[in-house]
Image (tube, rainbow, N blue to C red; front, top):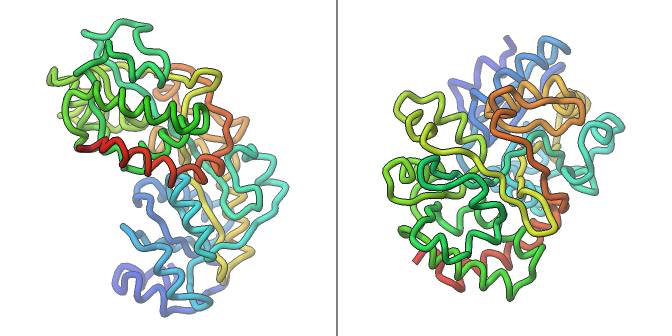
Length: 337
């Protein structure tokens, strides 16, 4: 084990920042949980001999990178949600990567046109529906969530949470501002309670009979099935993949970006290319019940059992540009009020 790897647990991020880059290493800043990255970093090190050092952050990644400037030890940043990836790029702390390997493995929809970030896995924003109280085919589209038939039957987390802002941005892309405002008012009027909790809390509410459908990310089903208490919540619902009219199911991503400082740039790009491979994407997707992006990669049998869907083909950067407007509309209808 390298000196840097040994010192991270003891010194934390401050120690990582103070230490110089070393040969055959790559340093990561990550918003993703340690258990999601370890299978990947282990596989990369086994294949290449390059050690991987990870600093896990709860918040403040952009601020840290800006403060460290050219002295930053970070080579790569890992995060989820297109808004966070866009924020990292707009802050000026990344650099573009142009690679035939990355371009072959990551469709254009899922990477920055200038190569500043590259997607790795996707998750769909779906409807969790009560097996007892919602018939098959009763909900098929995101537009349908504003139908009065769902009056008092919908649960969701805060409308201003990034996952929901991304969904509203997608609706805005398809329908424009006026229709999106009307839709938000309709969904709000159908809520069984004020937005609260996380996506899993909504499924618990369905299990408890407080509502009949909820909005959530697909991977929470896998997480609930692994938990002895939450399995009964998961067993009470089924996943429905709504689509936009003339569109597909809304998806968001996890992704990686090369930092502007990148003291181990060559190793970092090698890791990015490894991460884009079907092998690595299947490892990454399995760890969090997500969908790999590489054309030849497959989701796990459990994830496949939730059903097939066609992802909306809008470029996520287009949605990122619409997020401020989407948030404004959410606040305009006082969605969480």
